[in-house]
Length: 177
Image (cartoon, rainbow, N blue to C red):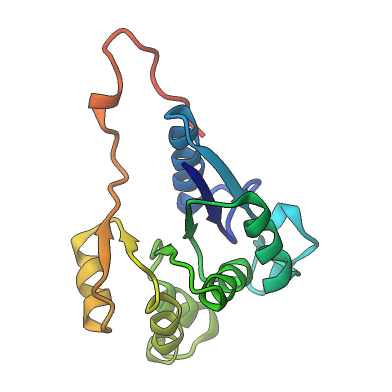
């Protein structure tokens, strides 16, 4: 399969989202899939206010759409709700094409802490972003319940654990990212 991952979080950042996506891309590639990662390092960017380690890509739907169309993916996964995630979402919706999303971080709570505004102000944005997703990948049952409480019921479990069945006892351990 040809799988595109669109993310606003990528190296050189070091955080859970980046680690998860790098491991996912590596495992998909090791299993014979072709993976394209569309991330901020491919574009001019500016630092995110209050979190300068995160770079916000300065591009739009047309550029991201051209990249996706040229890659001809069998599947598109939009990992984050930032500028690249929104650009990919708009492109896929305009073309009537499916995509999956992920809910990595309790985004409304996170933004509320940074802006001192109530989290309830941000839930409509999160809900609107994820509503058309064919599946929202979540790591825990509590996150699944939280999304369901906001009408987002198309969740799929995305374990972050190591599946030991993928590794023989004589094989070296998987790389750490």
